[in-house]
Length: 348
Image 1 (cartoon, helix red, strand yellow):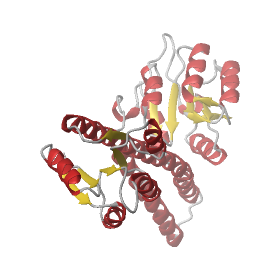
Image 2: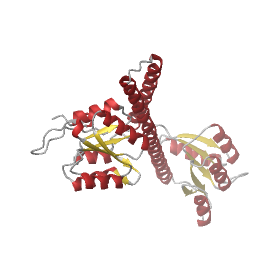
Image 3: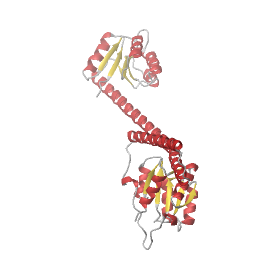
Image 4: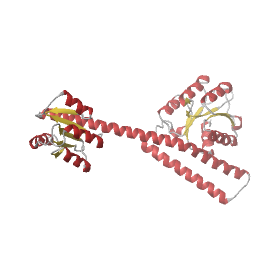
């Protein structure tokens, strides 16, 4: 553990040496100041974990020093020493931000205990600050990933669809194709960078290998060709919704679109006998993905639901996977990825 530094401020030479002697035996690094001005000069150049200051000093008393220190170093812990104990001075010191106060003459055991408690509090506050910082960082990375993965999905899917149209119409403009390849490579590079940030910020829950499981045919149900299958896409982002429709229709699937959770559930309730697969964007503005998943499963316990999101698999998504969702497809994705994914899911 890093050695803690204490700044001891007292205009009484003997008093500050006594505090130094007691605390150095406990392993603290002690710096001495003979008054408030000297203490402030020290704090301009260096830092400390704890300041112990006498209340009554010439030139600048402990209350004034405490007030000035809190203006420049609001997180510095301060213990006040006073030979004139009174509830008024104690309350004033605590009101200004002191963590504790001790009466003089100093009792060695009491000083050790009070300083130990102050240091423990500092360590706890530092840990809490670090946890809060990490949580803020994780939340920022997660949100940024989702917000960036959404347009990346549009870009990658759009590039893929343009290439497919070029191929259909036998357009072989190498210059345009090179530009499209550059866009695709750059987008994939961004996606990989985002993935690296996610792995640094928080571990990814991934209980299902490759995020998929095979669909079991119901008794008496025959395997359907793509042209016979209906896929309900529940996705709030219009551009992604339209591109998914175009990608799946180009592979022969029939596609039904829903722009929010309410619409998606209504469609499934009325068309459950037709719909073979639900492609569910897990984070919708009008409902949680788990609620939508469970509602669809209430309508048909054998429903096939494939989850998709710009977030990685987290605890909430994992709940749906544990409860029977057939797989998870992370954004961004292109036509080849989503079509291959669905084809693998439906292999019998």
